[in-house]
Image (cartoon, rainbow, N blue to C red; front, side, top):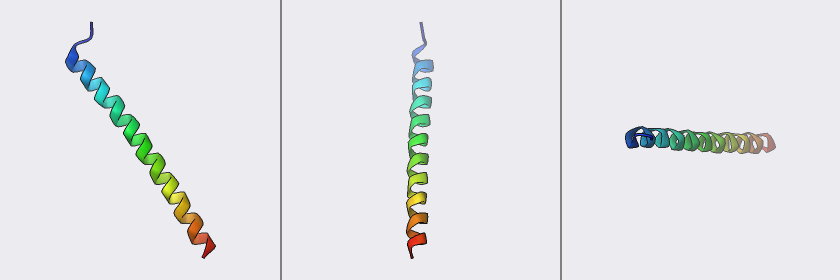
Length: 41
């Protein structure tokens, strides 16, 4: 049996990890687009 407090802490950790990965992916994508647009000018 998992203690509810431990479960919620683990759940928050997973959510934070996923959101951090998505944010990183968005930043990398935005940076890539920015660099490409600079090369065209």
